[in-house]
Length: 280
Length: 184
Image (cartoon, rainbow over all chains, first blue to last red; front, side, top):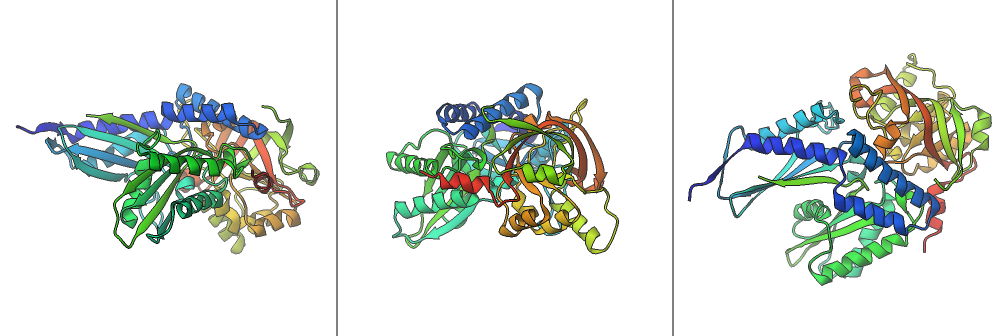
């Protein structure tokens, strides 16, 4: 079978479009999670805060203003079918060009520095963090995930003993959210990577948070629910002002690991969980 | 809104500061100056070297924000608060210049909270992650210093009914800690 030709220019166009949609519009599932929290929140200022966040989403969508002034680092997940032949500019250059175009054309804040210590702003919000995997088929799936710096600063990784219990992991995850307190803009969406190597766990914690829904495995679904329930009792609440709405979603992604290891990574995302996907 | 939101104007005087209690809700009108990480670092350098400040900070409120670019026809883009602990090392310098209020998100360190009482100043938060909502309450924006820093430049903002939640007052009150004491 001849490979299907896809131009990296088309991938770039898709990235531009997805950045635009993600910057101004909350995914429906995210908006619904916030509505559900608002309906159940009993704390006065907590409920008021959730209403403002929902109003903010409405203003952003209607007036095409960024949901948050921190328009994020751009994380791009690409699943490339192995029956695809990519044409045109180098994939990485095409994606980074798309980021620069989108951040200019949509009046988004450019938050990337080119060097971590010398810290000069690149002026384009490029480069993106691109994760490419080869999958079956002849299509390219693109997901753009915009991550703010304030919540990214609250990320955490811990290497557990293989004999540590699920309870120990719950304590650690809850502790990480408690330590972060109001800083990452709760109610937070939590991505948790369990297993793999240290680096795999961290990347899985990023993939997990944009998964949505409950885990397909009842064992992990139960773990997700228990973590959410524990977080509700902290009374951190919306933006840390108090209330039960501390977590809007808890999502675990597990992976096989070495007999000696049990890495657990926590990706804390703010209430403004911004991602969009498309398939070419 | 269910809480009682009181009108307040900036700049602030000592009397305003003394009347503020942790947990109070305000709608602020008047002037704000923005500054975040790099601007604080530069102001600190100016003070250390005895240079001239680009604006008179006495009585002013500093807003920790790096706004998104203004779309055509608007004074500013989205402009919510950034995380405040990163500015904790500079609190002494800023309050020494006469700053009376700071707006950000998240808790402050113990030294900052002590300095608030000593210099009689207040730490506020606002609706973090509601940049579009807050941007619409900013009527004017102009760069007053460090234009090369882009979103990290110091802007003078004219705001109207800008919502503020008092976190730390001069009496040791802390809204975030009060919330955690009510844990179930």
